[in-house]
Length: 219
Image (tube, rainbow, N blue to C red):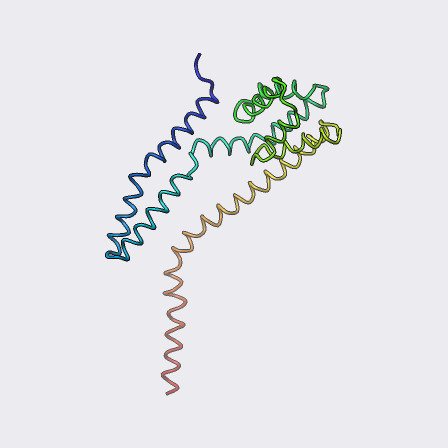
């Protein structure tokens, strides 16, 4: 049986994590040599040892690019997926059927996660245990906590999911605007550096020269 796309992406993430781990025995000594060569002597050895330790720790804790890309795509799909779930529930579909429908209609990480949760519910895992198990997830947490609270309070699931969809869409727009502003700032920084020499030559240096000239006249 060929591997599913989810299995392929998971295996890719594990492979990248394994590559980072395998590079540690090479890059950590290289960091030590760089510190020792640059500073020399006992100070260089201490600095090199610190660089090697930091490199070892960072490479061990580094997140695989495939895992990060999947999490970012899941975050982008979450508002749309929750809105589709709310629409299916509003049409009278029960939660498990709605999850199965959205999982098929929305390929990608969100559909895969919905299918996984649906399988747990189908296997008889108590719903409160399922929601609690996903409540701390950095992306799926809001949906899991909302469904858990709805089950505890008896609130209409369709209504709370619609409210959550509106909240997630607003949060996503705010994050997009914030990212756009940060891009503008990062783009303007090199431009400012380009104009800095001209500003120093035409603005600051004549002012400094004028101050020194006025001080010499006062003597």
